[in-house]
Every structure is written in C-alpha cells, then in structure tokens.
Length: 195
Image 1 (tube, helix red, strand yellow):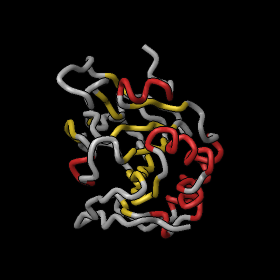
Image 2: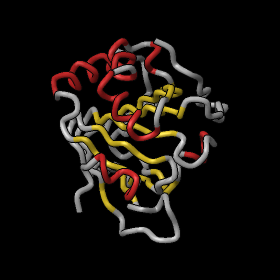
Image 3: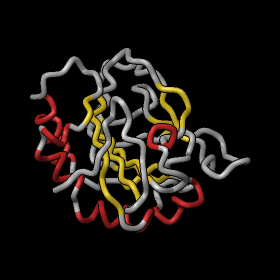
Image 4: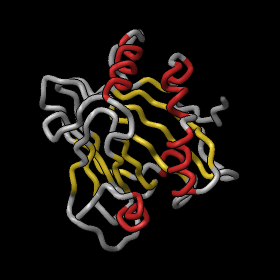
C-alpha cells in the first residue's frame, strides 16, 4: 500500500511527503540546533531560538498542504526531539490526548532532520486507527532527512527504542484548525505562534 500520498490521509490517518526539504537544508537546521545548549531532552518552542524553524513553521508550501488537510489553521507548538542512542521508545498514543482540540482539528507535522530507521526507533502507526473499530497492521515510517510526515490527531502511533549509535532528530509542529479551542498544557504551553 502507498503511504506517501496526500490523498490517502483521510483514509489511513497519515502520510509522508518524500524529499519535502533538501538534505542540505536539514544539515543547516541540524547545525543550528546543535548550537542550542541541551542535555538532549526535547526542547519546547525552539522556534524562539531558531530562525530556520520559524521559517519552516510559516513555509507557504507546507501551510498549503496543511490547509488541504484541516482548512484554515494556526501553528500552536514546535518541539525539537533528539532521540539519542539508547533512548526509550514511546507507547501507542493519540496526539489529541494532549491538545484536546477534537477529532481532526489538529494535524501534527514531523520534519525528519536525521534518517529515521527501525533500528533508531522510527515512528510506527496503525493505519486507519483514527476511525475505529478497524485498523491495519503496524507500519514503520522510515524516512530520510527532509521528508515530512503528517499525522491525524486521532491515529494511533508510537516508537521503539533507539538501538543504534545514531540520533533520530526531528522537529514536531502542531497546527490547529482556526477557531478551535485547544489545551495549552502545563509543559507545552501551547499558544498561537505569530510571524
């Protein structure tokens, strides 16, 4: 089955756009992120430190795709994820558990900065799980730097441990349908991000 088609998003709950950003652009982003002081814990709202991340958040082509998925929207969260070697995975979950915006009212965008492999704990998804009671078997979302994955806020997904000697850095962006309420969150402190 083709999991790389925008037209399949409503049916399966996700898709990955291959080569959305160039590997060179991801190298620039990786260099910029490496300059952050970090213990390799996830960083909330890195767009406040990174001009490249802010540029990605407001990228017209990216926003056009999101507009086709959920309509008019606003960015409400950016998060830098490092996933260093030997780090734990994350169990199955739905992202709406945290935002509480309601079915289909947010879309999570994962910009792959490093290669995502099964060995380094890439995301896995249960296709069609956003529309119970049926779903398909687990699919691993491997990706190259510059690929972008779009996740429905009710699709079940998670990740395994990073069993490699490499990082799996990614940038998580959350967009909410215009006019929808959402939970700000104690740690996330979500808010509408302005240019």
